[in-house]
Image: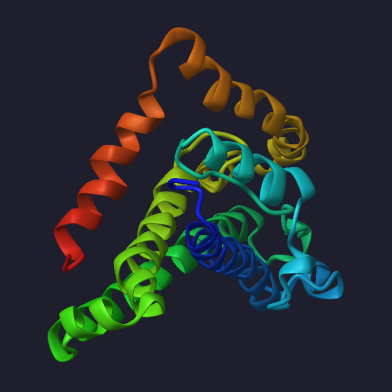
Length: 226
């Protein structure tokens, strides 16, 4: 099957699912700590992936991208929260928005530390040569897990609705215009997906891809041990 081997698919799922689940839990936890129980009441503080999965964004689209040998991209169900429960709606919206990318950064740091520890302390050559599970764990899963978290972090930091970085706009938006801003966000996802997926294929120009090369991939190459 080439790259689409069973171990490849398993490692991809094991890396991708925790990355997006903990990303969404980061949003939910931040909202909870700021006084909003909306996400908690809908089970979004759970480690259960089923509570976060969006059928198209979490399953169908990543599989289609994987089959096309394209970088895997996906999304989970948006975490519901009500900024009216926050003491400062604009500041609270910014904190909740950035909590998701922060969760990805934490996972990337933990994955990198584990990789350095294994690379430094364990006889990797002997383990990889004698154990197929170790081969995929060390040579594919760990680097892919770190890279997908960096990818999700930098991608979501773009200040474009409906990405998390757009919460920066809410921080500077006058309070009287916040309701209008949130309504616009509700309809931004379909348009954004067309811009991200269709436009690069039609125009053969991919500025977001170049941005991720300069940020996520360069940071990965600078920090990951192998």
